[in-house]
Image 1 (cartoon, rainbow, N blue to C red):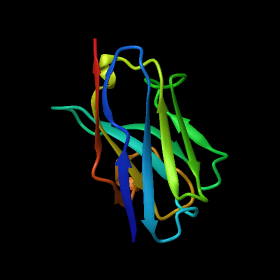
Image 2: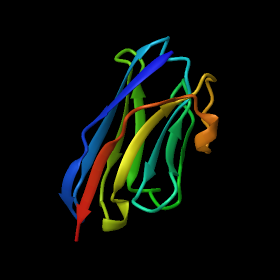
Image 3: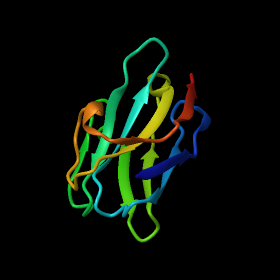
Length: 124
């Protein structure tokens, strides 16, 4: 089992920045592929970014490429999402996720563990 807890969400103006954190506990963190997803009201959960256990491989949704950066510190059992140049359409609940494999994945049903989510609201 892996337990995940997100933090760092909040209210920010368009063009601003936030950094989300995902603290992991339980099973070995460094062997898990990790990802960030988001869900806006009335919409399906969508992929945002993912990272392999080694941190070498990362992948981003087109909508956030160039603005968001995913990273992880395996020594601290923590994953991060640095979000810059935020837009109102980035408003959503952001979830971190972990999978039992070391590689990342792009679909939510390929992840085994989920955090409770943190709200990000971007005002125009």
